[in-house]
Image (cartoon, rainbow, N blue to C red; front, side, top):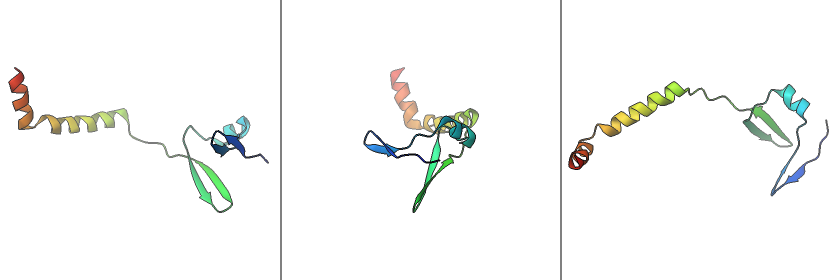
Length: 79
């Protein structure tokens, strides 16, 4: 299929017809790979960080921050 590079604001781009996009299986995020004379559009790898893993990491970070003697002093002065 031939298409034309068009102006999009200060950038340039192409329109990808819906049937081609559907057939490709591309998702929201893509990776662009450039070689001389070609640009490849590839599905970006899915991030496998789950909500549970994010919560776990956050709990560890919070535990490290809250176990400081200077924090206890600061809170004690407010009581």
